[in-house]
Image (cartoon, rainbow, N blue to C red; front, top):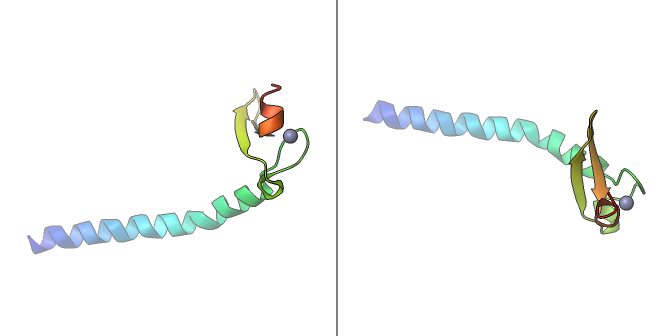
Length: 68
Ligand SMILES: [Zn+2]
């Protein structure tokens, strides 16, 4: 029983490490995220929506997304 608890704890710790490791990447993505058309982003008060094109994922602000 004590072994079972230990393995659960280790699993939780591992997930936490993975999450922490990925955080800087997600953060920098959020900062760089901006509208493909006008270049405005979250800092300008726009909400962004990702849209997949044939070659890559493009981001559009709330104004330009409705035009596509
Ligand atoms: Zn835009």
